Image (cartoon, rainbow, N blue to C red; front, side, top):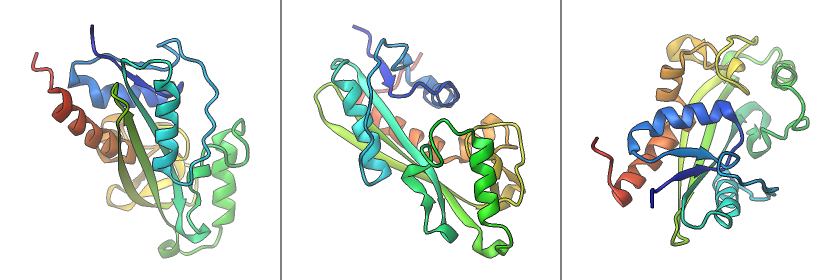
Length: 204
């Protein structure tokens, strides 16, 4: 039976990034929706790692023979005591557009000097394997909160996350550069290494 990776998300932007980074593993990657799983997942963990594993275990109950991956990611703004953190997706309501969410944070940081606008994106990726064991990894990217919304690429908080070394927001980066630098890219590459060690890499 072909080994599959099922990612516990319905977010197509995220799936694009995931497929790019896991492309050469030699295992097909499906979203939970594509795998026919629809389930309400209550993310009540107290960390990115806990929430990622909660999601992966929730889906693994339906697909015991597959490798289930899940991520939990968010933005930590130091000036706001690391808010929104694990509540990034739910901040101001899940159905609120990111244009509105981004504007709220720009307003909250209005007048705050450059050196106090430090922030990071955090991503934890959890894997639950067919034998029930789990592994979790974390990736981060450091930056600052921009003074305005910039860039049409990416999604979520990308247009307000400024990376000084590159002189632009992650919303202005090409998908290739963003995947190389991003919190999710780093965490997925760390997870890919674990999968390669566990299952071997496809050498086609």
